[in-house]
Length: 223
Image (cartoon, rainbow, N blue to C red):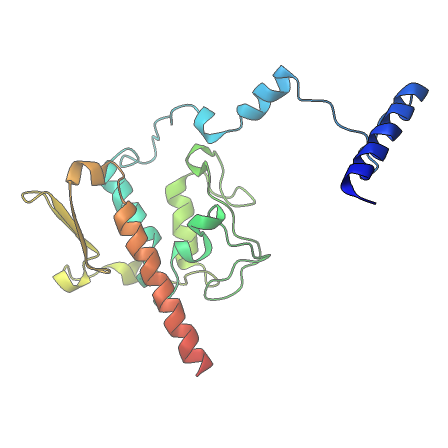
């Protein structure tokens, strides 16, 4: 049957149904859903991240609203050196292009976790963290994956360095208004904007570096 004849036959069928007083059905056999009411639309819109109120003060973390601390946290999110084997970062499982999760039924770090990776959208507004709510602040939650044997399997004492320049992740040069990320050798001017969260150049370079590392690992494994 051609497309025009099919449409005509379908329209004719709908007219017969309406004349008989029967509910119309769609091509899958289900009754069509009525449009959302204004109240329903408002309820759906209230779930958007943009509709969230300003973050309340965190009395447990005096660095919570410090832009420099936020910039450091964004750096550590991609840092594989926090893991025991130097290959796993927070971003390994919380992938930016996958709503900060990894599409796997169980998270994969140094081992296999017993639950799937949680998406992180809106995490700053949450009251409880992890699937079972066992942590009550972001800073306490962040410590667990670092030391979990199935995730990064690191330990806090091992992260204390000597302060040598070779150990630095980033250098913030205030007199010259620039930041250098030593892992990917990216330097950018404009400290106020960077401290306010303008980290796109750094995160793009880190993502590209992570993909390069993975390709190298895959080629070694294939060989």
